[in-house]
Image (cartoon, helix red, strand yellow):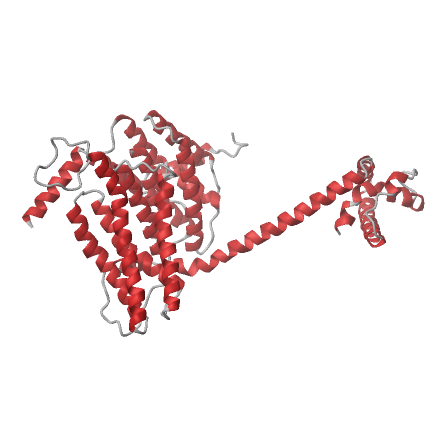
Amino acid sequence: AGPGAAGVGPGRAGVDAVSAPAQGGGSAVIDMENMDDTSGSSFEDMGEMHQRMKEEEEEEAEGEAGAGEEEDGEFLGMKGLRGQLGRQVADQMWQVGKRQASRAFSLYANIDILRPYFDVEPVQVRARLLESMIPVKMINFPQKIAGELYGPLMLVFTLVAILLHGMKTSDTIIREGTLMGTAIGTCFGYWLGVSSFMYFLAYLCNAQITMVQMLSLLGYGLFGHCITLFVTYNIHFHSLFYIFWLVVGGLSTLRMVAVLVSRTVGHTQRLILCGTLAALHMLFLLYLHFAYHKVVEGILDTLEGPNMPPFQRVARDIPVVSNAVLNTTAKAIALTL
Amino acid sequence: LAELGINFDHIWQKTLTVLHPLKVADGSIMNETDLAGPMVFCLAFGATLLLAGKIQFGYVYGISAIGCLGMFCLLNLMSMTGVSFGCVASVLGYCLLPMILLSSFAIVFSLQGMMGIILTAGIIGWCSFSASKIFISALAMEGQQLLVAYPCALLYGVFALISVF
């Protein structure tokens, strides 16, 4: 259909010239230049002729409008071979474009596969968030993992927001890249990368866990990270951070480890899986805290002022009134406890 | 202007729906995708930031585009009926209006104190509450208002971050 369709324009005048005596209408002049304007094999010629005959019938039905088109065809026919080639190229580009678009559309249709993982109620999300901090005791029976992606995705975005806030309050300067890019890259990289790595290890260690479950487990484990960082980016105490790191980070790690242990058989396999997960999870929290904390300390080394509490050399703070108030309040509470 | 599809009465109605948090939203309100209002609000937001000394039009446009895309994907996955990109962009653009109040406040006062934090939190809550109210009435997602409000709150939180710092 390609060459046939492409050859319609310039060739039409030739056909009209040929068939004019038989039908008694149109131009009586045979345009010899256009008669040679066919692509090659006789098969294609037949296709073209067939196409032209069909369009001839349509044009006769239109009447005067058909005559106008004939004239256009004649005018375009002056371009000859170049016009036909141009039309072929345009036609091919259209086909390629259409194929790419339909491929992209079918890719979009695959996103519907993710639909069941976003079908949740607020109550369920809240329950799962709280459960992610409570380690299970029963490890002899495989524990159920909710295969849901809404909660983990929101937690990753929350971590991004907290990181951005922390970077802004500590005036972090990222030299290669943007703050937003760094935060998103770090959080999503951890979530997707460590999940894939743990899934690979689980495959090696014969653990009963799917990729979505792994993503969900690790995502909910970030709840502890969010709480810790939210508190410690605003109240700057090394000791407070370490307490939160051990308690909150430890609880969420224990929960993930317990669930994995309940789904793995064999001591060595359990050790490998759980050791790796615990190490990565705790070290990530440490990294997130200190990657931006060092900058704060570096800046503040030169800002020793009267606001410095004389008895405690801890992570200091940019001297802003509200933060100083927060710090003294936290100190007072810590002293009274 | 009517030929361009800019209907001032509808724009005003939608603006009132956003500004009045307790007003019940009409489900059919978002059937017509109107991007003229959101465009004006984005420009106004950029202009108020400019008055505060921050030339960050690029960030505003970039974050709105990416945020709209993200919300579009999420809402399509969460709702029974799909939603068009224009509808999402329109709703998120209209609900940016309270954020303009925040950035105009930032021209005169610094938002980095305790009062700034409380005001910012309130405005973010207002924006995301309005946006989620309109979304759930347009998409008939009863009982999931909090689930829709939270991602909106994160998006408006990033805008607030630009205003505050």
